[in-house]
Amino acid sequence: MTLTPEEWQAIRLSLEVAARSVLVSLLPAILVAWLLTRRRFAGRLLLDALVHLPLVVPPVVVGWGLLMLFGIRGPIGAPLHDWFGIRLVFTTEGAALATAVMSFPLIVRAVRLGLEQVDPGLEQAARTLGAGRVDRFLTITLPLMSPGILAGAVTAFAAGLGEFGAVITFASNIPGETQTLPLAIYSATQTPGGEGMAARLALISFGLAMGGLLLAELIARRMHVWLGRG
Image (cartoon, rainbow, N blue to C red; front, side, top):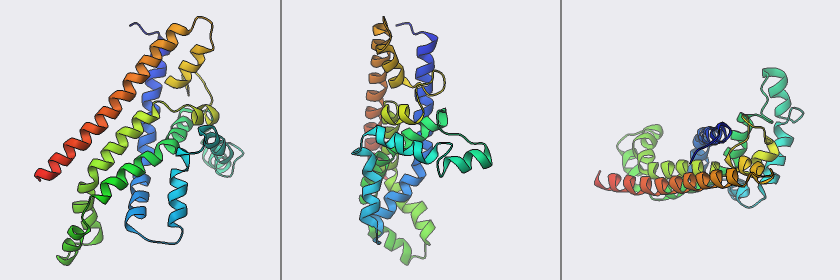
């Protein structure tokens, strides 16, 4: 199967956007998952609902919300543009941000599942031996929850490859800048004679997504086996 330079460009951009989105959301997702699992505080239920909101609202709504916040006239986008010269709307960085917001709940859910498997008694035992909070987290909690972190990151990456609604609303469909695989497929379906290109890109998109999901499952299983032996 021979691909055109435009098709390779869409594939490269999809991989770049998905990878950036995971890098942006991974650490905040770990923190939020830890808060929701290990802490009880006022507003916890509301935070839990807000975190999972992108899973239930239309992606176009998420993209519109980002446009209102991070547009060059938005309450966040305006200071970024005026003070630092940073513009997120209609850019690759903006596409990564939209993808990160949409995939954020997936990482949080996976990390929470991993964290729930960690026996709090192990942390208490380390505490009685004099280990501080940071030491307990780095030496006990983090290694034991690592299968969830890795599985969540890979799943979010795979999901990011297929994000459409939020990206096209916030970052538009600009070839070479924001036109990821789903957007390229959409453009091909709107172009006379573009059925072949759409079919090729759809097949590649399916393969990448399936590979990502299988890799996430494999990583989780291998990490559980490794931790069990340890």
